[in-house]
Length: 407
Image (cartoon, rainbow, N blue to C red):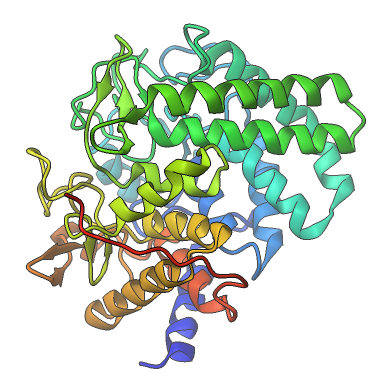
């Protein structure tokens, strides 16, 4: 199938995923709801194609922004929701879906994510850069200010500068970043300061500072830039694994490193939080033989003791994860590495005939998990490949590094 035919198929999926309100459902048929993280990331992926998707996504998430403390839903003032299904969701679908997540309720927003609030700010900044839609961004700027207040008051639980999460409800997610699960599959004792979220926070501060300057809020701009500078310095000190020359997966509740080689630090590349001398080292790890496959970067290194190629987050490959890493490679000028990821996702599509949310690679052979053949299409997977195919120039500058296998 040629690239134009693939784009045509992906556009059909995007139309299927688009809600009447303009945001993209996370996936069909099992995730036909408003998601914070998924809907924002897919809006980012389609920003060049149709920026109105980002506008509509920001608008509806701003409307549903947290107003009170609710331990059951984990709502907090200023927090952006994780998941919402309307009251008119059909019983036949709802009963089947809710059996998987007993804490969901129709017509009630769930706020069990740590990164949706940060991504809301980031995508607002990216939307403004793309469209210069002054009136709309000014209208939601109070929501951005409330989101910033949430980061300071609730996101940073102990005031150490890092953003942490810890389950507060009896039912729900233990892990609340993109590798979210109800169980502690990442083996990190809470409260958890996951690595990529610190990068999101840094970029959220700098994006919000840019907007604060535009809207004449110089005191807020100064405060945000100071917070960003402090976070960058402390992050590069505390999360860096000196022997491995890579960033750890997280700090646990005792502020000890959860040492593992994962794809998570790849998300830092687009945020600006990395010190210059660490960038090449991160890229080299991502493309070392224990992480790289012909179909993309694994979530978890083959050398880790808990690696499982068939697992959800401990060795499988996620297109959206690879796409986010590629955005950082693009920004930093890693031309060859960016193109390698693009080629890998295209190769996956050619072998599978679609782009699922995740897939398995064993001995360089690709396969899908059984349930994912049903849960399709997925917005941030479809959006990832579509974004690559929309990018005619690939990259405008080049920075080549000599990649070598990790010792």
